[in-house]
Length: 62
Image 1 (cartoon, rainbow, N blue to C red):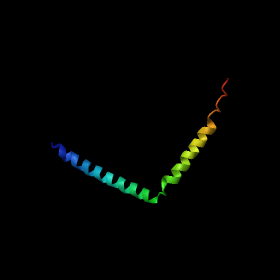
Image 2: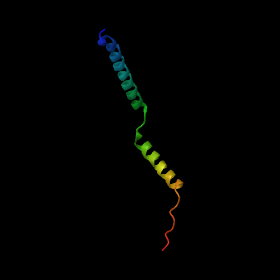
Image 3: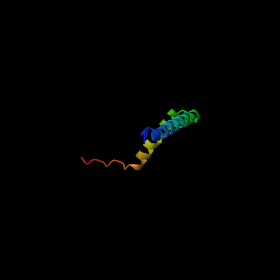
Image 4: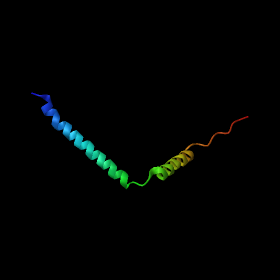
């Protein structure tokens, strides 16, 4: 049996799935607002949370 007979439908299906994924990715990118401000605010909140969660530094004995 020729293996290309079985491989051809899988190759076509993979190409269709990749095209659908690209179309979906582009549609989502068109809907989303720019991520610059969102990213900066998010990382600022992470930094503030880490500062609040960490213990204050111990005083050094002289």
